[in-house]
Amino acid sequence: MIKKIKCPKCGIITTLEGNTDEIKSICCPNCGIKGNFKFPIDTETSKIIKEKTTRPLGITILAIFQIIAAVIMIIYLIVQPMFLDDYIHEIFGIWLIQFLILIIIVMIPIYLLLAYGLLKGKEWARFTSVLFLLSTVITTIISLNFFSVLIPIVIIYYLYQPHVKDFFKTEKRLKKNVKMLIICGIIILLIFNCYIALLNNPYVKNTVLKDIIISFREEQLIGTWYNTDRAIALQFNSNYTCIAKKDGDMYEGTWKINEDFRRVDLIWDIPFQLEHPNKPGYNYTIEQVYFFEQTIRLYITSISPTYSPTYYTFNKE
Image (cartoon, rainbow, N blue to C red; front, side, top):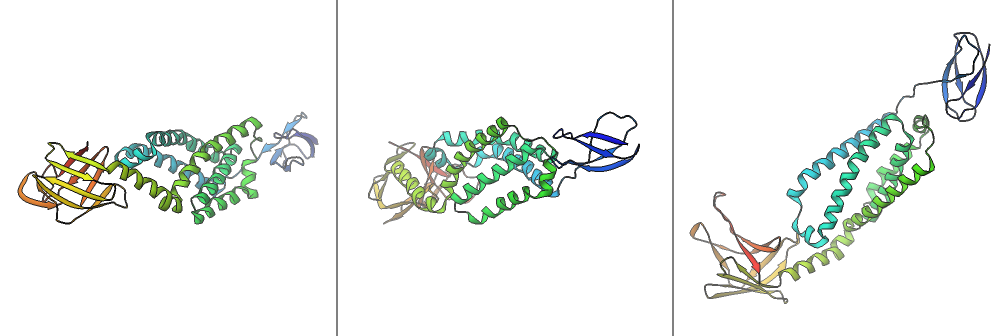
């Protein structure tokens, strides 16, 4: 018998000759979709029985990585308040941290949805993955991390392999408005990621950014600071000299912002010492002060962690 068969993807009708209950392989001459067709008893126009497509292993791995990324982001949201440095808040502003958190909150469901789309062979998931990877290439170049460029390029190349494209071709082509929505979202994310990549650029970090942070810390430090009962005064001058006053005694020295930006290194002409609050007679030379929010702290080295407090807090006048 001769049957007219309608392609489920493009709708083109082709003819196929065979016997009742016979199964034949068929390939649409228009769109290339492959499948099997079983000749029925009736003579009505039938559709191709689509062949089950095997998911490539690489797609499964990519989907797993998307899920892992979402889990890492969730963990970050939980622990970041405990480890975020104060100077990041002060220098870049709380808005940057809040925007970063907002981006992460938005990206968690996107990564999970992307993993679902990859596993199900959705063309929008492959299209989005390619754009994500292209944006990663751009940001890694900006951050001068050239070795990391190879990984997204290899993945993009893999996503364009014939067997991978064939797996995603089981879905209809993306509508124009869907493509534009995905592109706009990636562009917004790319702008923010480019800013972060610029901050991670070694040249910017070790020159421009370092100078900005040091300048900020110096401006924050210069002035006179007093402890809680105003018994101790610390004066930091713009010429990098410092003076400590305690019980009528005066100590002179120099100061310098430490490389981690949270500490100030002190060098005294005559050692400036403070007594441990809970250990009378135990004096410790103060060689550093630490920034803590809007105050500075002079930490006292304790013999045992049970002694508290182990620091003096100073406020700027």
